[in-house]
Image (cartoon, rainbow, N blue to C red; front, side, top):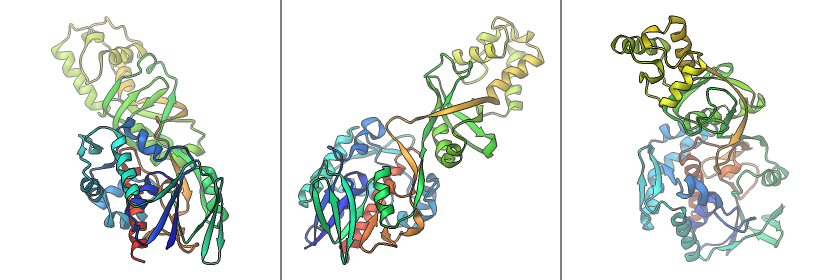
Length: 400
């Protein structure tokens, strides 16, 4: 019986093992940590954001800053609808939330973990934890995987280690080119009077641009203790991960907290002034933002909160609207987004055959998951890439 060694007990490794034909292969998973499926456990705040309800591969690839061209063919063979089906067949009820993220009905990642553990138990897959791979040696038609628990011979290797520098070094030693790792999905550290004392304040739809990169994103925005976070920031951090790393995370952004052009905001202001001339500016409810944030805007614009709206000068109004619609902020660093740490970089995609995720350089060697130079914005997309790639590997090996 031929041996498949799967290196990495994460999403891609387990999905591959769960779909392999155990009558044909002896399957072993090697995991360096004491627990398997660690990222699955913490994803979505412990609820596990399994995938995203986007069923058109052409639309789906738009969420991947790196890997979008290559993943198109992968997603035509296995996409989020297939993932949902797969879990459905194993009696796991999933639900689509308002933002199209998909979670188990149970709201617990343990449901997903138990499903995988159950699958591999049925298939007699052996799992070795605390098993650190030191080196992989090519020997004639086979491989020898040297680990802290001894040597494992393999006819086929599925390399799904995640993006640790150590695991990238191992495939680099086998001849693969590695694109340097940089963080993707991070929040912006900003010290500014406008954001001070307002952590937790959120905006349903804001616009952020990075002028020096001529790029912008929109979406929900959140003020944190460190600066700014939320989907708008995370999206722009993913798309511009490489440029922002080069800037050493020192750059200027411009924020429109209400997603309205300044002339439109001025119209709203004038209309409010006409119908509420006696209202004080501090109590004026002109825009869809919290009272505290509005008062902070007025304060940093150096306008007296008790001044009546009718007495606000054109200059004062312009200053207020500028801070609301065109606020320039200096970013002085980054913070990793919760536990959902994602990196850009990894194995060069030119060296992978995306029909079956095999290495173009190494025979019988397959690569999947975050070890590849593929990453996505937040929302279940990174897992979907893992499921789809692992599915292609398992189907290819089953049909050999």
